[in-house]
Length: 136
Image 1 (cartoon, rainbow, N blue to C red):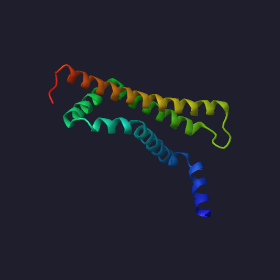
Image 2: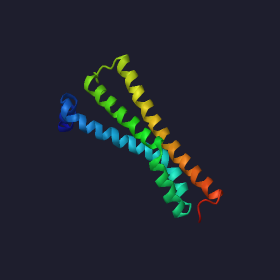
Image 3: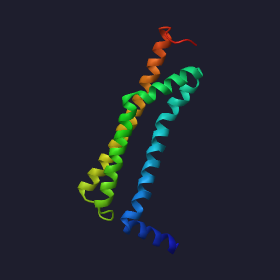
């Protein structure tokens, strides 16, 4: 148990070493939340024809909201790194709490951008199918 406490204090005291660990954790949390938000939508689109699903995926990657979601994530990751380097973790101030709240909002905006891109692509493909522009 003493080794775990020493490791925890090492991570909190060695900023440069532990930043990559926290950034990897931030990426993992982002991808986990993204999976939780998008899993039900992707599961529903998999029940469609595989050609339709392929078209949805191609159009999804080309949408600007998809790129916007990743840009917002990268900005929030840089904000996270800045906050991590400058913040007092043991005794946070109102400024640091506001920055943490802004990080959470940016993560949610990135999720919304991904969801909007996927929903828009699904609707566009279904509209093409309805107008007989795409065959079964």
